Each structure stands twice: as structure tokens, then as C-alpha cells.
Length: 90
Image (cartoon, rainbow, N blue to C red; front, side, top):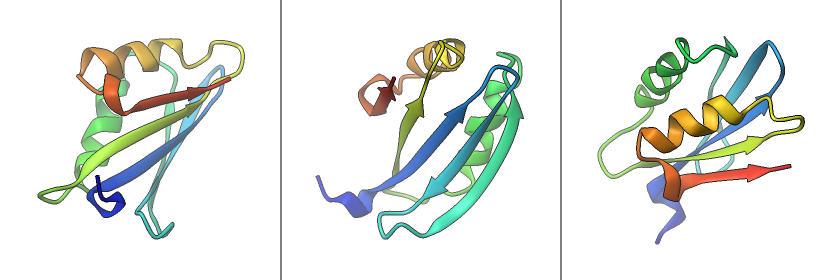
């Protein structure tokens, strides 16, 4: 797979809020979003990411999770079909 067919969403996970940074394959920052750590808010992350998806691009999510704060978000992304594009670092 060519790396220019992906955008990368790095997530810094905390107890009360998460921050997502979106990069292209050239490490250029496309956007940033901070949102509450509440499952009802998680769909807004995908809505935000979809703004940057053009035809042929696939999002790759990378979660930096310490303390299990990203568990609910990881489960949400898996339920949305992103399991093959989900990386969790502990």
C-alpha cells in the first residue's frame, strides 16, 4: 500500500478529554480537535476526520493510551469498522 493513500489521526488520550491531530503522509498537520471523553461525543471525531478524506484516502488511527482512558474510544472505532487501521500504544 502506498502511504499517500492514508491520513493519520494521532490521539492523545486523557481521563476527561482527548486530542486528535490529523496528519498527511508528508507530516503536514491538517487539523486538530479536542473533545470530551464521552461515547456520545465520539461520532463528532469521525465527522471531523471525514472533512479531510478525499476519494482514495483511508484514515489510520493511532491511540496513545495509558491508564485505559481510551478504551471506550477504541471500542467505538472497532465498532465503526476501523479495526484494521487502529494502533494502540501503551
